[in-house]
Length: 403
Image: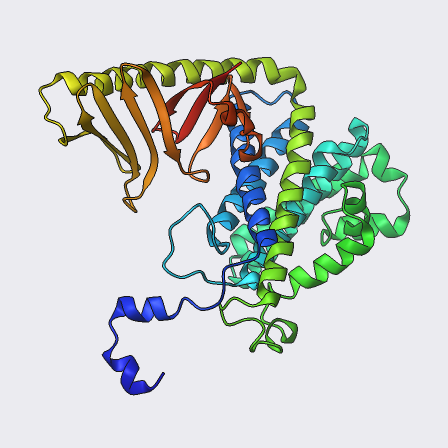
């Protein structure tokens, strides 16, 4: 395309022209679907344990680290090409940016296992925790030293000395080799053990961890390995086998890290599951009351003097628009539209014979079956067509009853 041709194109035509490359492979789309399901489920799990007072410091940090890990997953999901999370005019391929996020997720996974899942006695845990505190403190000292903020440096230096005193008084720290003690008291390392050893305990084989950490870390900084081979195969935002392959690695790893941590959260909070279930049940009851009002409003549309073909808006929020059309006497077609894009994300038909689900966007909704969260892959019950459902437009949740 010549410069003269480009000058005559509109903005939309340029955007359309920039949609280069074939559709992604089926394998890539399966990875996208996997991460989408995992992130949504982990968001649900995180919410289900909210509001529970932490019975121990280990539980508290599990909550903090899992929240941080899920937050990174939510950041990653919208930037992956062909994501169901956002509508994009151009599918921008940039595995390097995904790599930076996933490296952080890998480090959060290691921290979670080390501080919350790995079995150790209270004395050793206190030692690990104080080394974390000392690392945090010395990092802040370096930051404020760079700003010449002597007041903050003095406060933090005093805090660091107090932490060192606590460590020296710890029975587990006392039996460590002198070299490890010296390293810990220096405050430059947050861990007692090499990251690759902790990663292996957390489920990432050591050789794989070493390779992944080099690969992911190379894109955190603008060092030669991150840009030397930018060209036809990668680094220009365009779809290529290399971009798809490395993006798939990032998304697969993120899903694996989330699932492993989710399972350990369930195990750690198992004594509080009943309370968490009560919280969710109460929220579901409140949601069902709101849905009953909306359902009654929907069914009343046909009786409000509408003419066939007429459409009324039942709900308009920043997230969703619900509109009803009288398609024939006593039959109402209800469409749920995403407010931002205007696209129909669900459509149902209300008549004297009942309510029928005509279509829904598989990636837009969270699914509940008989009060339990399910993923897209667990929706095979819909093939039997003998289920009831309710739509919660406020939380983008489909509640199904079956069996």
